[in-house]
Length: 255
Image (cartoon, rainbow, N blue to C red; front, side):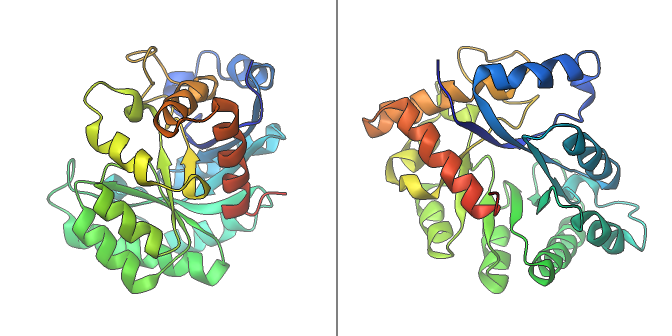
């Protein structure tokens, strides 16, 4: 059995876990899970993530506003995020970024929200967790402008874009999509990516890896992603888990 597994991006506050959240999280240590970062998508889920992380010693959280949630934000949302960030289990501002797949109509608002949260992260000296869906050009332009520390989660860009991310000193998160049959770009990124800049993630309950594709995802499925990375790199899966756990702790300043 694998050990020392860190899920750098999860959503255990999602309603998909409402029926068995306590049992699921209570069983994860037996599966070798040593850490989870639960990510907020709006103010409510950020607050819920703080509450949940207080209940489990291996769970940390990020607070932030997802680009799909750009509408109808309260005027004091940054103050709320700043207050949440004072929690000792808060390790990042996220997930934040741009999504032009679901929201073509709010591009300017998304960019403004993204930049404001990056500036907050720099003020607080916290890394960011970036959501970038079909918005690579604008995402990279903003990241190059502000040069925050952080990770591009569920990375879907090209190897060329990945190289630009690495130049900024940022990390890349890979998840279940790497195991999909049509994952040519993700495999190419994994091939060129130095192991010391890789994080593993589930994005659960979404994006379950093969052979669990279509099922509700959970942190216990991280080894399937590690095995795929190991196959691509020609190394041992446990080595992938060990390195990516160290990378996660380093980026998010987890002792």
